[in-house]
Structure formats: C-alpha cells, structure tokens
Length: 91
Image (tube, rainbow, N blue to C red):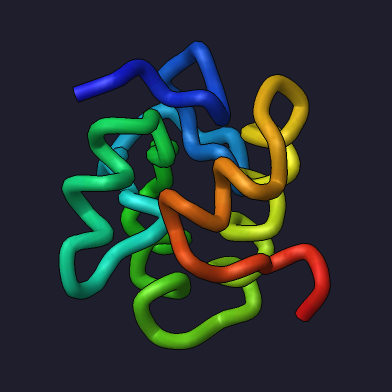
C-alpha cells in the first residue's frame, strides 16, 4: 500500500481528532479500493467522520475533489482520468 498523498500524520483529516481512527479509501467500490491503496488515495478519519462519508454526507465528495487536486499537483488530469475514470473537479 502506498503512503497517503493526502496527509503525513495519523489524525482525522476532517476534524483533527487522534483517536478512534479508520483508514478511509477515498475512491471505493468496484475495484477502486485497490486503486486507492496503490496510489495513496487514502486518509485517516475518526469513526464519526468515516460514518458520515459512508452515509452520504458532502464530506465524501469533498475528499474526492481534494484528492484529485493534490494528485494533479504532480501529475496530469489525463493520468488521473486513466486511474479513476472520472473528473471530480468539473462536477
């Protein structure tokens, strides 16, 4: 598994808490979890924030957008599209 491109420390990416953390795969679903592992598309979330993402809150979309932005600081949009197959910045 690759190191997260989103954060270097172990704390909730959303609220900053340092306990009760879960590793969140930013892009998940059919085959996307392995892609997230391979490319570092992960971040730590506390259980409350992690549950919110999977309950359909806007946090999930925000994480996808921010992850794409971070990726594109060193890679092209075309590379991101080849990996994920969707552009979250223009949604």
